[in-house]
Every structure is written in structure tokens, then in C-alpha cells.
Image (cartoon, rainbow, N blue to C red):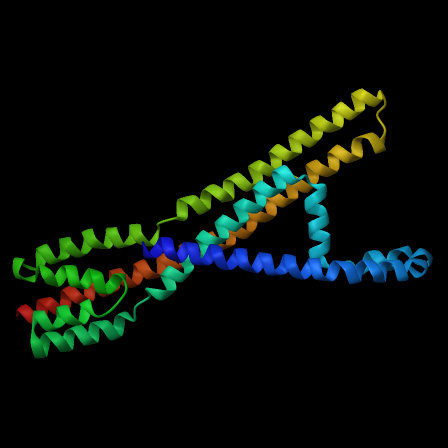
Length: 262
């Protein structure tokens, strides 16, 4: 449930930000149009001046419209949902990161002063997957160290699955975005050949429209896939680091319990 609300919060923030940006663009549209009319003679003398002053976001919106609303909208949806899932995973991993050295020191001190129950309280009051693994192991301390080790390994796999939750969806959007771009490319090529057939002439002006749509959709899909791939690899690196910390901490916990038993 926490993951669901976190995902909704991230998606809501991105939606509100997009709405604010659209409102700002709408407020700036009227003055910009007036300025363009007033500066028409100057731009007529220097046609490159107006083109060079086009803002980046305005150029992106223009390319979005030229690429076709159908496929470009689907590509943008893949980007938004993929980013929402990626940010949710990053926040989850950052919030549940545990200082394993400090936790081990607290557990060892609790075992020396208050026994197993005190160590359980320390793990219960500490957030993160490492503390949860420690707690599950301490619950079965009375069954022997072998049982504790098996419990730690089993529950460690559960925690790994929790950390990797949602990664399959991110990888899905990484694969779908360029596929949608290539599909738009194929459809643009078909439109270009239809135009050639209707005109009965292979001229650059006839082919340019369909080819332009094809190239824009391909570029859009590849850009979205590359952005999501960066987030995906970053999340994998964080999970790998956390898993190494969990393994090292689990080994240290078993050593501490062995000393306690002796």
C-alpha cells in the first residue's frame, strides 16, 4: 500500500508540474504573438534571427505535433509512467537504506546488556530491509544458529524481491518506447509511398512529409528508451549495493550470535 501511495504521489507531482508549465506557455502565447507581429519587418530582413530565438520547449512541442499526436502521445505516456516508477523505486531505496555498522553495534550492545529481547527491540525500531532480516533471525535464535542462517537467507531473498518490485515494468517501457517509434516510422513510410502513388511522381516534396513523421517518431522513442535506461541502471546499482550490505551484515550478525552463544 505504501508503494502504491508513493507511486500516486510521484505521478501527481509530475502531472501538476506539466499543468503549470502548460499554463505558463498559454499565458506567454499572447504577448509572444504580439511581439512577433511587431518584429515582422526585422525578421523579414534576417530570417535566421527568429528561428534561432525559438525556445527549446517550443521547438519540442512543434516536433511533437509534426511527429503525429497518436504515436508521440503513446511515447510520452511511456516516459511519464516509466519515470514515475523509477522515481518511486529510487525513493523507496533511499528511504529504506540502513547504516549497517551502527545497527550491528546497537544489536551487539543490546545482546550484551539485555539479551535477545533487547536486540529484537532494536531491530523492530529500525527501518530498512537489514533490520527486518535481523529481526527474523533473532526470532529463531532459540532453534540454533543453523536455523538462524537459513532464516536470514530465506528472508533476504524476500527483501531482494521487494527491492526489485516494479523493475519489470520499467524494462517493459524501455522496450515499448522505441517499438512505438519504429511503428510510427513504418506508418510514415507507408504514407510516403501512398503520396507517391497518388501523385504519380517521386519528388522530394511528395516524400518529405511521410519521411519526416517517420524520423521524428523514431527519435522520440529512442530518447525515451535512453532516459529510462539510465534510471533503470541506477536502480540496479543501488539494489546491488544494498544486497552486498545485507549479506555482509548478515554474516556479522551470525558471528555476533555465535559469540553470544559461547
